[in-house]
Image (cartoon, rainbow, N blue to C red; front, top):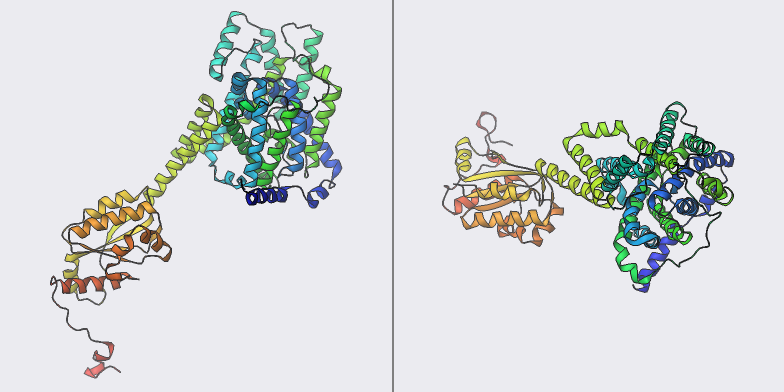
Length: 579
């Protein structure tokens, strides 16, 4: 990489760093933001534990991510309201990576993904999020909710997590193990926690019922000595010292593809969450490139402390907004409170039953599904319904990145088809102009005019080729192009091919109304010269018709037209010359 490029990237990143106004905003409404941060921390604690356990790296990894990544993303991110940490969507991606590369592979993937996010921020890629269609986002969210729910089945049934990369396979094996040796204690705890969360959220949305339910389940398990309720186990008191001991330079090549997938997911989910936060408030607007930088720095730092990759968390961000947060102080407070819990309450956290955490995540997965939004998408158009279903199915059967790619590809193909169907190629009657009825009828025998409406591009151009080359029994074809909205190289080449075929049959092709911005495309492929015989361009169709008549007269097809009288030669009143 050249020195100039390095300097440009460095200057771009510096421009994305926090400024004076960002720091000054931290002092605005401190009490309000401190209370919001405390509330979010209470909600985030069981989620951080649950997603850490689900990822395969343990509860301590989830807590480390919530503390380290949550703090850095709050300081350097592009949203004043975003709360970051471990999420279910990221857990879905991490589970197969853990199975294939082990915990150290996940840490390396997180580090590489962080670097990629910083590069994306420097390249100003954050604005690309606005081009993701709503059905893709809804299908993606539905698929994630299904996967998160299925991932909790082993914990909720109280069986060890079976081997396997595909969530459907793992779920089926867990059900078979449960059928052989049922653990109704674990099922009861998971169902009870999920039920309390779902029922409580409807009646008292402001109360963190997840914490209430987890505490109650832990107390019951300890008092009743429920041996079947397997606890989390040992959780270290405090964060480990930062270290790069997990990094193996020899494995970087094989881990690059998973890192790209993690970075893509982190970018997508974080920018989506920030957009949701903007929509819930008035006057707040995130900077997408700064958000990518914040998430990149957070993911570079989290693995150093044993944390998993992080993203912006929609559920925690929504709680942050609803509790009145209006600055980054709330998200920072959330990370600080979790840090205090890590250092002071680790022995208590270790006693939480795994089934209770499974219940928390089951309820979270259910609450992720917005039935109203799904119903609206399905009713909108058949294309939107198809995109949503395909994206959700791909999320469940493949992985999240492939699901988004498939959703975008299908959405793009359907959109191109819709645009192509709007393009029209119609024969239009000749303008009579100042010709007599007899002259006009004679012209119509030898001249035909077509109007092209809409885009002339690769998805629609070949249909025009077929229709245009089927023209028969005429000497001149006039193409009215003033309504062509856009034209690409494929459209220009197809048009050139059609004109050449007509010329070989002795048919002259003229064009009228070629727009200035489209001349370059036509000229680049050699079509402009064919559409403008003898170097003549016609601004309007009447001009092209007059030129076509002159051509037919020269060719002897039409008789010479009688001399046209000028305005001065036309008779006036009572036969007097007009003045």
